[in-house]
Length: 370
Ligand code: NPQ
Ligand code: MG
Image 1 (cartoon, protein in one colour):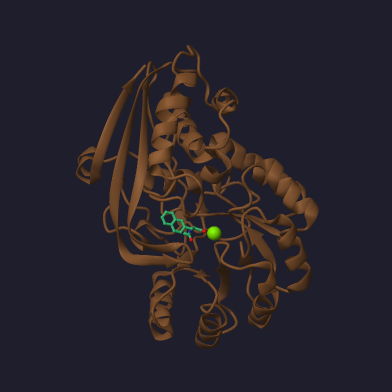
Image 2: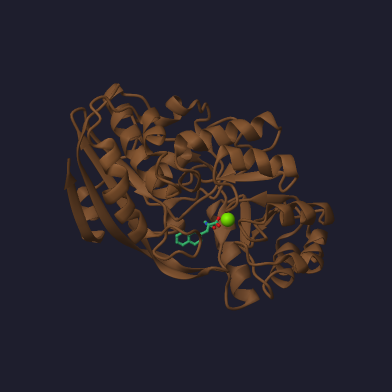
């Protein structure tokens, strides 16, 4: 199936978070998302750009992605008569970087194409799982009692894996408190979002006694060598997030010994097809992967569920129920059922955008006609 793009609608959407989310990068109370609708001869498709409102997690942010899509990406897709989703990345390869912007467009074209042929994204990607086991990412809180209360709530909701956000001076004590309070059986891991430096290795080694599943991205995204050196000093496995921007960088990180687990986020690597390639590289090396999360709306959440249905996704991801983040979403909510979330079965992403809700949360719209 192929399409000709006739118009693209960009929307800035602001969804209030149910509780503020603090990480070593900053504090968010609202998720500002960029939603992309591609319209063409075969119908329409939806995509979501996972960039944040400022360049703190990565260099990309909503405004940069918006401009890049309009000025540099769409002009390379707009005139193509028989555009296929698999050609989107090659056609955009002359534009350096801007992977999250590229991923959003590819997702929308994939959705349009797969809807037109009636195939679910999970089937197209090669996923077999019907449901995935969710984890939950827990922000930095003001106090340890507050953290224990928040974690208790998530365990009561049915989450079976907990990830604590850490930063210097919020690491050993919260981890110890959670481990002591909930016991050794709790699947526990931490994520530093690059908040440490090579000279902090001694401090990070203090986490070894808590039996963590992994420590995610302790050092700078560009510091693969530092991660390799740190991996040799720590008993806790290192997982990379920000550093992995392509299948090639995943292969390099594994060859260097910089990590033994990989967090896959399609936006960060330029799309769901590249994300599958990262999965394939890791699986070929016997390295387990899991699906990261970027506080997606139902659009991105649906696509993440499809990706996480691939066989190498051996660890619970940051795919939580909608209610972990939002009281209202632009699609029907994803819910926990017996501690799992179902992979969408409908064609394409398998979700319908509720247009009235989308409109209510939209602060800016631009329609670009080809
Ligand atoms: C991570 N996500 O794994 C990211 C980081 C992150 C679920 O822990 C707005 C948009 C705020 C994206 C905060 C989780 C964000 C964001 C943190 C992503 O590193
Ligand atoms: Mg992370």
